Image 1 (tube, rainbow over the protein chains, first blue to last red):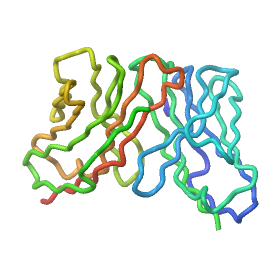
Image 2: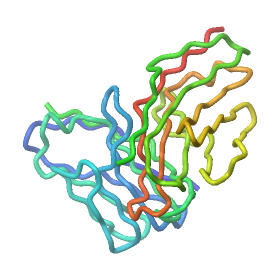
Image 3: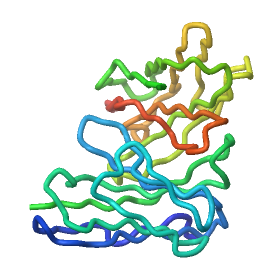
Length: 114
Length: 116
């Protein structure tokens, strides 16, 4: 039982390049989330998926797209990377959105955009 | 909109001593959930403890306990018998049960150092 896994762990991009961050969970959770963490700030929600087949914007969605490929996988895509997107990205999952159910986090992806 | 404030950017504690990390939040909701997450240098976010607002009893998990003051909108974390492995960033987080997003609203964190 690996929990939440993310790939890659670290990536360097040039401005304008695109890339996809991958996330998978093996806990049969319905809900999945993408957060970003910037220095001196807590995590902020980019996009979330309450259940398979649905996705919605969070607090800071601009510049990102997501795909809920199936119940296990939730990817985050940067179509044209900008230096402002340099951050650490965390994927999380929970049984559902509207409950006390714990959100479990992946180990994070550190992204540097030059 | 709900906000979470952690007023202590950094804290330090001697090994085996007790330390309290502060967290206040702003909300107009009567029912909600509160969490403390630990983020060690590995960056993994680890749930430490959680509290349901309608429960008056303070949550406890081994050496970790909270002081939940609903009227004051305060949710502090007490770490007893501090250990070197407790050194990490600690984030307080808020979650609304009725909110479709279900996301956590985080404070900016408190960096805890443990001195041997």
